[in-house]
Amino acid sequence: MSAEVEKWRVNTIEGIFETDLETLKQWINEGCVLPTDKVSKGNLSWIEAGRAPMLRSTFNGETPATVTAVDPPDETLPALPDQILHHQPGPMAQPDQLAAAAPTSWPATSPSHLCYQHPERPTKHICRSCATPFCEDCTKLVGTSKVAMCPLCGDLCNLFEHLRTKALHQEFQGSGFGFADFTRALRYPLQHKIALLFGAGLYGFLLLAGFRGRVIASVIMFGCISHVISQVAWGRLNRSFLPDFSEFSLVDDLVMPLVLGIGITIVTWGPAILLLCVLIFGVISGAQSSPAGGLNAPGTGSSDQLAEEDLSTLLDPNADPTKQAEASKKLDQLRPGYQMSKDAEKSQRELSDPTADVRLLMSYFQAPLLIVLLLLLSLCWGIFYYPMALAVAGYTESFGSVINPLVGLDTIRRMGGTYYKAFGMVLLIQIVGFVVTLIVAVITAPFALPFFGNLPATFIDGTLTFYFNLVVACILGLSLFKCADRLGITTD
Image 1 (cartoon, rainbow, N blue to C red):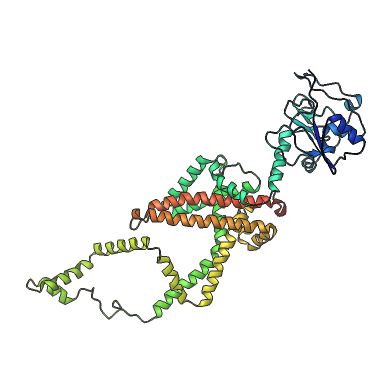
Image 2 (cartoon, helix red, strand yellow; image 1 turned 180 degrees about the vertical axis):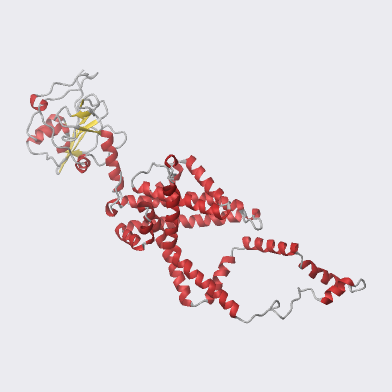
């Protein structure tokens, strides 16, 4: 049974033509097809004619013998010409030369990844010199390290999968930063579901353990954020967001995240905290210096105070019942239980009153207008610079770099529009997190307890905050990864 003639397509300035291999070689010899023209074998991808292994010898003026595939394939390699057997391998190609010789896009399953001598077999090695693909049986392993040798030119070969991964890595890095990275960041924590459940549950539980628990929770959070940013910025997108506890280090895994978290707080919210303290003390001192007034002012008396007349009324059995009831009520108000119930009611009202913080902020406007404007500017600075402070902490892991805003501003300058895209994504995540927090607070409001607060809401908010912060960290890590060449970050 005769073999089917291979169909080739050639794309020249005169149009696209279909022919067989021998006619295509004749067109090359006649100068009708140039090395820069595109050719395609069957339904395979288009490549430059000069890079096609079956046409390269024709462009060089040679007439190589036709290589025929056998089915089943012969276990021995075909005899090589004497000049190829004595071919001296050239100098080792550099990584950038290998990347330039490799295709820029290799799908996971494609018929173009077939052996040059056995088209029915997948590619295992690619010659670093002539870029010819070979299956595992076509190459000969030499040396103690078992390096594959090209059967055509005698040079060393590289693993196809290694070059493919590197090409895809470079293509992804040069694809720009956009919405696809945002969706990738949303999916990133879900790739490690067990770690996500464990980390989010632990973080939410520690938030219920008082001040010390919140400090430990913050350390864990900053540790995970720093770990994710550094790993993603290096191109390790499949690594878990939890540190490797098998190599636990007190300094690296506990002290350093705490120090970096303090540095981030200082450089972002430090000015706002300082001005807020000035406003608070200014309002308090102003209130203390103002004239005292009201029913409870010293020396004016109060209707709630128990007077001697009230005591007489309580002791007199013939006193007016109305006056006795009023005196008894005043006496009840002096008991400790009454004060505790009043404090509990006040705590309940504060937890269920969403305008309490707004009214507190409105009271600050009694302070000078200049300080208020500076406070607003410092809040804007904290909102804008907070993502960059996280990014600097992630890829430098240096306290000095974190608290130095010039490092972050220079990084913003180098990243250009990529940072502003990342900032918009981070801001969107934070707004969504804030809305979700309000919804959870409203739904769980009946479970609020006096003096303890809304414990269910605290736990749920903690677990969701853990997820949202991992998404933010992945967004920042991807933005750094896409700008690694401009920032001098070495990627894998």
